[in-house]
Length: 518
Ligand code: FE
Ligand code: CA
Image 1 (cartoon, rainbow, N blue to C red):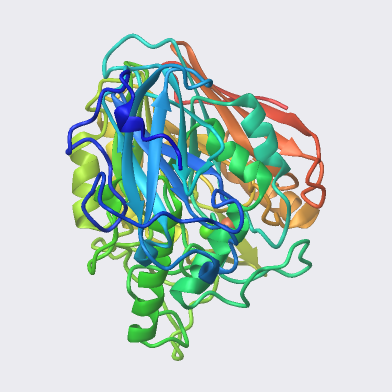
Image 2: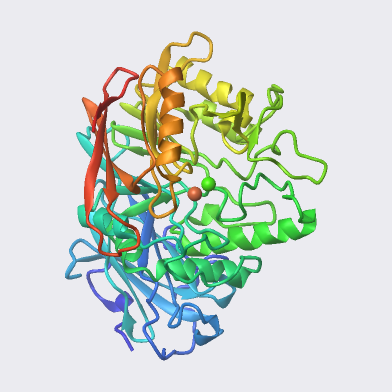
């Protein structure tokens, strides 16, 4: 058995309030559980960290000696110890503890490590059954309001496992940003056509199905490296649950009860596999995913949940179906995308840190995109365009608040996009939108590139659009600018595909504009 870290002199034990517990139950440090011996490495899904504060972060792992065969993990609580150190040799351990991995939560472990110093890198690892996990790296946030000259963060989305490998994550891990932001479609519940890897289930319905999708994705060495390289802030989009879902409105062909059960399974699996705090743990009512975080005096992030509290799609057909592109009137002022509670929360706290960059993290595209169907203009039924009143309220908040440098980041569209966002009242530029392309999901090819560029050219003074490559945004916030590099790979059919910078998108301090070097 491993040495009990509680006995080492250098360790400052955390109070019960700070030492994290296993998801779903109170922390029981030292609670008696039988020793376990694994048939294979229980840390096959790697380690992760998330949600950095100035005094700590969440560290995560899941015991899974055979990731696609949950029965290979002993179906009882398993003791797990954890360590956070100032260096990667673990010579100076500054926090440590013991917790339990519970079968009811797929033996996932979420520890809220606290008592750390602000703005500093740390190493962390776990031990279980005599096995030591890989080492992860995480940086605490600087103190709120403290001077910070630079923050690097990646923005990622849309990583269909069956469609492609994750060479983009290998590039991200090598660059080791301070922070990784994921804006959704971490899994897809169904395989795509022309797969390069086997989707483990035909369609996710049960809790085990959803768990299998995360287990498959997290077995990917590049994704594992990206999780181990930096703490993540994560929100979900639709495919973590069901294509284009909104709230508890049952999609076409599913009863309300069947959909609610599927959503519950999906939410639990999401929590189990992401480095989230206990406050996000799912309950009968749902999950609290929206949150605010600050990095010194430089950046405030407001992460939004754009799925759980949405009104239904407008103009559903007689069978309950929603066309992908709609021309009906969706302008009713009460229609919401965030839900009233979240919208009020955002309005109360947006810009409260007083940071130079005030970044809204959401899942899709705010810039309204219309497609021409033989002369008829239609908008996507699933983006902000189908919730115009909610979109205008958000834009009015960005335009009206004296928060410096409002920026919106998103994903979902499987294309890189950047443009100023206008004040709905005056039409004046009020913020900048940056949308990341997909890590591996398909982007629609040259036809879409020509059509969408043509449309944007007509309607926007300045924009950047490219759907032809997979990758992510590598961003650096500084006092004088926010630079987003579109990092793209040659082919997601090759796990070793090299990455390059497709475009540099620069937002200068104090101007709602974006300069493009492509
Ligand atoms: Fe997607
Ligand atoms: Ca999506």
